[in-house]
Length: 551
Image (cartoon, rainbow, N blue to C red; front, side, top):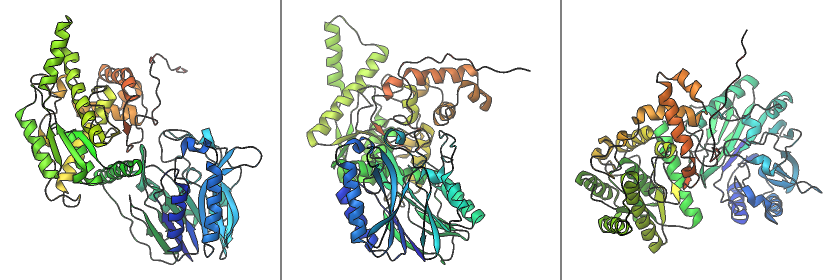
């Protein structure tokens, strides 16, 4: 018996195109049963497209078309399904065989934490689904029904256990159509969980995961077939592909990648697909000689090509010669077009205008004015060419508000907005050390850019650490507070730092929530990402006391 995996990168809403691509991939496989990702007909997550007239019906019509066009194998295709007479929807998977739908599985566990909103659209199924094939019992567990949220810190505990039901029914094979967003390290967690499950229950497991960038989410693919013997077959990470795996295949050690390589590939795919699916072909970004913009420019080149990236140098009276030289060297290393638009004339005109109105911009107002002038020039340059601006801020800066609205925050996509500053350094060093593997003839990021102290260069001799704690100490607190939702008390127990230090950082995060509500789309790589994955109130106060029982 052979299990086929079709690892797709569907375009959300492109039902016709997704269906045709799926049919071609299915026909190319020699397999007894073929599994496709969750919601592979319309792409996951379809969000409010599910509410559009005719959308769900078109998905259901596509299932019928696939059944008729691919009658020679048993195929599992996932799609939204309308419930007769009620108008409510299920997140379903249909089993297609001999040109017909022979069974339908409705997802029982509907995630509504982190970036997920399934309860908004779907009602849960009420039973597990199995069918017989070649003398083997096959069970279907759609994504969360298989994982049960064990792989997400924010997931709830579920009362029912669809996977347990399938195991109790004596399934020989469990297939999981999946659309599990990328988070660093998650795929290895999934593989180890599946290996343990297969060994303990003597069951074969086939997980087919979606691949591709979908707005702020990246799906890494990495689909696999595992038996009690071990890994029998796997598809590449971050690429589309198809694979037919015989159940008597020899097992092998599965592929492993380091965190830096995972982040690198995820950010490239997320950026590439955003441009492809929105129909844009060119990117603009400000390059300052700093490490953040250098990293974003490097990712952009890997994603869409050097000819499609323009770096804008916008030096001010406070820009150091070293930073300008680093930005120019970066452009040369990457082979991108660069332009220099000094901001001094606009900056001086801004100051004169205020002076004529008996006003004066000093301190933060003066610094932010420079950032906003740069934002204006970036947007004008991009508009002229029908290009998209890439925001270059990192997660540490976004967390504490060390960013300027309508200045360095402008852009369509925030490429590294989910990467802490310390991880920015790690990733930049990894790229330079592995530049040939990353597709570059030379280490792309200038050494001085990596090693010099970070500075916004908005006033004389400015350094980030004049205003912020060291990024090592800052990120240690932010990671626990944001990624794992720990409060001040819990962080204090874990870290050997003063409570006041932690409290001040948390206050900065809370005070600057309004900025993040206006940020560009942030590509998700961590357990908790700013945006839809962290829906905090704009106006709030941390004033509550835990009741502690005493004896």
